[in-house]
Image 1 (cartoon, one colour):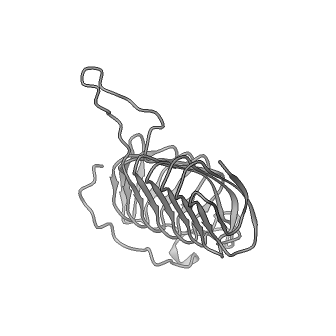
Image 2 (cartoon, one colour):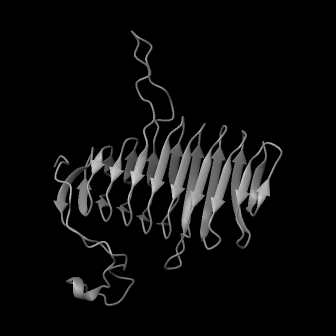
Image 3 (cartoon, helix red, strand yellow):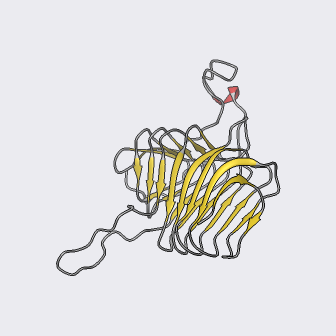
Length: 234
């Protein structure tokens, strides 16, 4: 059960591998099973990475994650036959908890902004059963987070969620369904409250100009689009 503390190219007799050719970074990667793989872009900025491969055939892929001197801070748990894929220029303000187990998968697109105390989990960590039938009630479900999605502080994304490009999940919201593109969703469970929105990274106080009353004060990204899906519950 080797624990790798430096991010660099690695392989062992159990088929576990790390693919990375950038400068060495301090991490904590725990391979408990066989045939697991961690692939990290050479340009990735890793501020903190803890990856626990609890079983066999797990896969984690991390893109460049290097923008505005920010990078990735994450604790990732990967179960049997499961995967986590994180795109380019994904940033975290503090450590994000990410978990995919029991043949479930998480995909996080490019240019996403993850705030503080966030969780992205396909699973509930522990099983729940129907007493009369013995049937499992809380099987993991895949998560797809699109490009340029902002998860506000304490926002949680649960299994079965799909979040469209350019959307915002509000403070302490719990996403557990389909959220369309370019909208704001808040509450528990998260519900769409505003459509046809666009957000940009420049901080209101830290980045000049210190007043940004309209779109002329920021550089527009490629994600200024009208909300396409009208089926989400509001």
